[in-house]
Amino acid sequence: MPWVKNSDKSGFTVVSAVIIVAVLSLALWATSVLVDIILKSSMVESTEEEMGTIASALRDFFRDCDQFVKDTNDATVDLLDLEGKNGEPAQGSPDVSRFYSPASYRQSKWDGPYIQDKYNDNGYTKDAWNTAYRYDYTAGSTSCTLRSCGPDRTCGNSDDITITVSAEDIYQDKIRKVREELAYINAKKEELKRRYTNAGRTWPPAGFGIEDLFKTYGCDTTGLVAWWKMDEESWDGTSGEVIDSAGSNDGTAYGDANTAAEGKIGRCGKFDGSGDYVDAGNDSVLDIGSQLTIEAWVRPYLSGSGTAARRIINKSSSYSSSTGNGYLIQLWSNDRIYYYVAVNNNFYAVSQSTPFPHDNQFHFVAMVGSSDAGSSTLYIYLDGRQISSRTATGSFTNSTANLYIGRGISGYFPGYIDEVRIWNRALTSDDVFLEYLRGTYLVDWAYKYDEWQMEYQWDSTNDEFYSYGPDRAAGGGNDIYQTQ
Image 1 (spheres, rainbow, N blue to C red):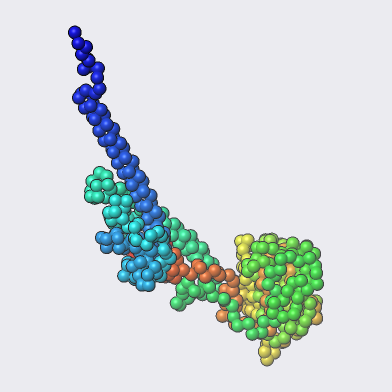
Image 2 (image 1 turned 30 degrees about the vertical axis):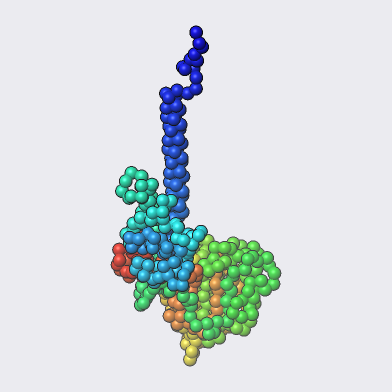
């Protein structure tokens, strides 16, 4: 019987071939799906990364311009403002029409580009599927929306990629800074107001505004013969170390007299009331002549009736009623300021009627003397207000004694003395008031303007300064006050 080969054991069967084809097809399909998933994931990641870059640029734009880029329903145009491509010349600031009101101001604050177009093809205006982003912003809002239509390129479906860009923190930070500045500005205003009120002057002065806090107050310096600012870093007894900024009467400190940082204007002299004083010599310009004004800021340590006489300024060698000479300012044992001047060798006094205000603050004292036609008049001022006067018959009697700050023939002053000025003329009441206003209110001109480069405004009704806010206009709903 002839041998016949078994067909079940020879080569591939049809079934085997079908199975192999099916397996290969499934593998190819799975690979295709996997590649598609990986590709989509990569494109989503790339789009999300690009949207994050755009969001950061939009926030920077808002920080400078107080708005997001203008929304014209075409992100391929709107987002170009991040580079300035909608302006002339190219790559410059966007055209003024691209900004909301106040447009010129917002345009001037543009400081881009805020994003870089790597290939100069405006590629960042489209997602990874080459579909234009959707951009939505309403003027005045602190947020905007950026959307990619996603892989299906149709917005409104579940694969959309959407981010909301918020600049509320930027806006609130600007408001916080403005309120901090307003607190400082209004505190300085209060200091000026107190001086007006203390001096019995009308507040506020006509036309008052922020620039009044930057003024250099003080009267005409004609006749100013000596001015000891006491701003030296320290004193150690070196001859002439206490500088006269108006003349050549430099003084020398004795005892433990030194300067302190607690001055009314800059530093000041500090005296312990026990042998501390400044000797400014006896130049003739310090004599009383026919007219004289002496002023100083003082802050005594001690208070209360019965305290020893505290000499503030002295240029006299005798206080007697028959041989008196020169002048003296002191805080007497009854706790009142006294101004003594020798007239025909008699010592005449003018004083305040109420106790000196001991509130641990500096107070301004000024003494004015004028002699004419055999009659001499004395005036005393406290904190810019005339509080007493006296007239005596005769002329002033000068003294050859040295001028002391912080002591007299006997008795020393315990406390702080600052800004001692002597004039060879009798200051008027208005002059004294202007001298009382002298001091530091606002120096840094940055305090003149808010975060939107507008001057701080004066509200006379509420007696405070405020900001117009981001709209830079009064009554627009964005006004910012120190407390709201």
